[in-house]
Image (tube, rainbow, N blue to C red; front, side, top):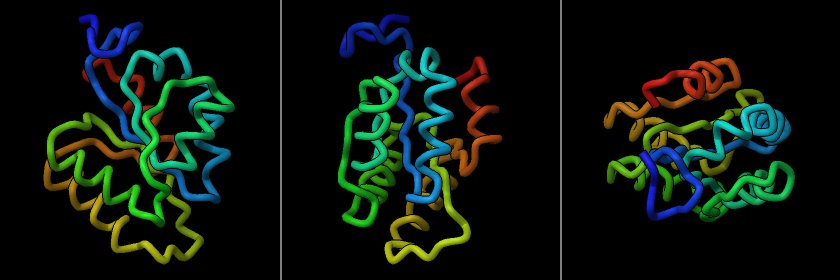
Length: 133
């Protein structure tokens, strides 16, 4: 199915992308490896992560606020509104995050609305390779 809203997109699906600072390099590597697949989706991301994906990988990404400034909450709202089909959120479990309530809100929104969420590369690999997404 061709998405008429965004020329060049072959799937009318949206993936939200978030990566903690300690996992941004992993996200860029994942996106580089899966560039052709990701380019077929509408992509929305928190600010810093989205800009990295656009600059380093060449993907078209709608950038929201940075995570600590409310980007995680913006993505949670999109999930709750049914506008996101999957979330790739590479979490750094070894670091503290002052915006942890927003992170928990995003995780909760995905669970409440049954939206697949990958918090690491292994899970993201499984989701991106599924024909059902």
